[in-house]
Length: 400
Length: 112
Image (cartoon, rainbow over all chains, first blue to last red; front, side):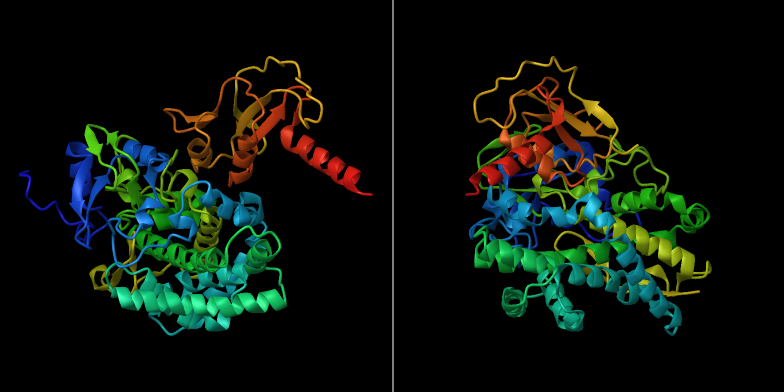
């Protein structure tokens, strides 16, 4: 490649099928640390091998805070923000994470199981009585995670429509202008500011009250951090789960033999969820870009201070060095050491909750919807959206 | 299966406690990572001196007993799978329990 040649555009073109972009395979084999051009025109180093991706995610020299600096390379028109847990390094990151961690441990999340099952049952009843074809995305994959996270955080469900619409703007890669993103973010923050004032007057048994208490009694975070934290939990907390669940349902409908296997052996569902998370060929990064705080070497490549590094979880999850027959979807795959929730200090705070929601959503769907369940349109008629780290379905019309 | 220790540091030597006055825990600590580990990599990233990830992708604790370090308690608390335990080799008890007892004691003493 000559010096002035423009590096290939990233994200790579959307796959038409369930094959991940061919570029990932080629890069893993030939150029595991590759220069790419981002939608903003900025450049970045793209890591595609499992080993490099995981090593990068535990490397403190690859900083999220530096990626939030005004002059830092950008993926799109929005970033999580320097005052969010996603835009910080240790020790600020650990200070904030510690405040809510207890709500997301495996044990605490397990205690939510009966409530999530109740919500899944409510949603599946709506699916069952809806006129067909019914959109599983809006009626199920989206509404269940929204209800769960709104309840956990303490956001009234009646305001779901506008909150979801605003978060769609924030999480779109290039679909909206910088001004539109700023406005949507401002609207969410304004909404949360009012809600937080209400909690100050009248604390409740929810995560928002926990954060308000940590702010007011313990001075453990600033007002801006409090607002941004609530915003991240609410938005990421429903968007990422809904998108993963929607893609998971689509994947199963596309692999009827595997779906049939889960009907016969529902005990395979937890493992199937891990495989659905790993297999998702529509994840192009799965995590936010990092910026080097000093010169460093990955493989044979020198990364200079200030340059951006993208660790592609989607590619790592299809690395044949770690996953035999990696492009095959196999609900019985074991072990399954996928990186879909990231790795290291930024490992998804809601991972246990997302897993449980996906398990319950799958089980409820399989148990309650007749086994003639199928996609109502050709799969190439489905509409996709491009988010900050993955593509996701806009709709998923099914019938039975 | 839960609670079963999957990977621990090598056999503890039971190094004698260095009971220094007000210290809540006296001995060295042994780090254990249980089977419930979900490989978040949080411990390996936050405290690479104490945790490493093997070829088999499993997280392993430092093989030898380590000196008490508050950073380790933070890591224990940060594990989403609650899969890490610290054992005080002087008492054979989990460090967390000793610490909580000490904190309680301190609270009681602080009362008028």
